[in-house]
Length: 259
Length: 300
Image 1 (cartoon, chains in turn green, orange):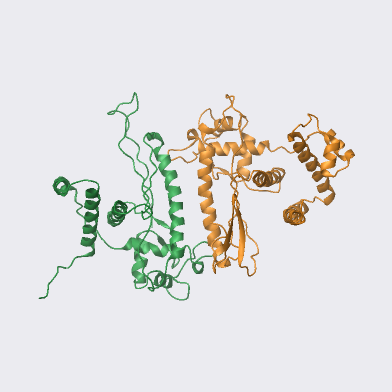
Image 2 (cartoon, rainbow over the protein chains, first blue to last red; image 1 turned 90 degrees about the vertical axis):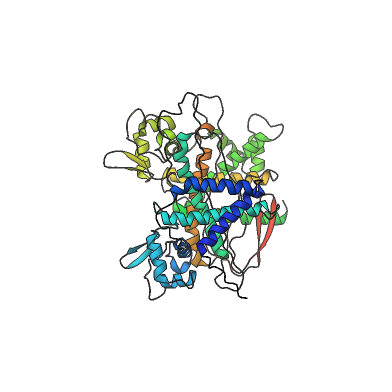
């Protein structure tokens, strides 16, 4: 008898994996499946109004940023001071079409270029294209944030589940620098400084991974990487300050997101 | 001293002296002038060694210094009699400007809300370049410092008269008296660290060289760009730490200040021919690292 299985989209698979990892992590930390199901249903009911009305694109435009990594590090695409060359879309070597074909074989160069232009990673200048930086800033684009958040959540949960089910020597990196008494007044400057350092660190790691990257399909490959986040927990009032009066805490600038 | 060690010392000395001689030739200093300064350095070094030796006498002994250095007793006596007069050029102006720049980047009173150096008006009792100079140079006369910082392009003055910090550091070596003095100071610091490590092998100060003598030149521009960016970010982090206000001795404490810092520089030159291995000295251990087809560095 032939069993007909329903087609499961990539988005659905990603959602299942996220929930699977979240539930695994919580159960491995001691929560019961009954409690989880009950609480999760209650939370979903409570938050149903917050569902985004916009249709969220699950496109992999952000994955096209990998082209930038090669553009900044392949000597064929750099000038004598290490600055990425301005490239024509097609034609003689070096061109954007050739670069894309090498980094993302099988992708449509025009489609990749559109993504990079949309992400602000590339700008056109006199009929040629030049990169704006190794990192992309999503600003207010909800679709990109949605894609990024799902990918990040999936990676973080996968890390947690892995570490809970493996022993010393097999663990993935999971380290943090925390301070319980950080002055709120210093937060904006701290976030700006930390973002600069984190971007430099991520760029270094990106270069390291790229040096080891393989171009063919001769051996098994996987996606790997490092994610960095900063956070602030609720503010505690200082002695002599009111919890209800005074200015609202200043929001730190949203940090750039590295590819 | 054994023959192999003597040979190594001669080779090391020659390697040090060739770039130094290039510099001195550029500056128009001939061998005669160099020798007279070298004699002075020998006497100072020997005097310091004699002073630190057990059972040392309070007054420097010309005969003893003469024996150690190989200089005539007359030469030694004449150098000792001249005292410790420094050359006329003083680095104090430069140091003041450097301290002002450092305070601008590290003191929240002179920064904007995101921790960047604030654009300052030149004069005024608070949050001004004048106030910054008063705090960090110890001198309310700020115009000479501002002029100097603008000249080396560490500071920019806009049309409305306000000033902005462009660089965290003072300019690098320049062909002027202060720039040349700075070069001497940097070389002396580097040599002092290496000398400390020779004398204190169990507690060496960090001193590392990382290089690839067989680098494909096509990759040099990218590596130089990345190293400059990495070291700039790292330098900012070090600057924030070593110049933190709470770590710095202020004028009204009894603490005696110490000098602490790091230095880094990039070097580039002719590569080597075929080589099978290199010996890399890392403080406390010796590591032999084989060259791969495309090596990424001689030390990890």
